[in-house]
Image (cartoon, rainbow, N blue to C red):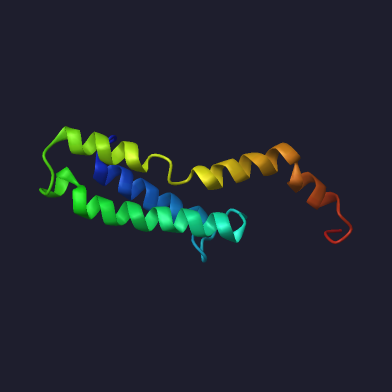
Length: 102
């Protein structure tokens, strides 16, 4: 169910596996420092979801769910900002026009 800790964890894992992790088929090109930060955010999300997830019986209702979601809503923020920065600089168009690509 959208808004639940389990849903957020599953969705974040899918995004991470599809776009961020080392062997992702559609990996986003971000600097290693940002990759590392997002990776650590994912580890933190996974740890906090198992330790504090009210859906697994170790929490006390919607208060814990809200806290969990607030703490983990920005796990991809560094990668998002980098992608936006690259789009703003139009790095891909410049790459396509470079003599190395031709």
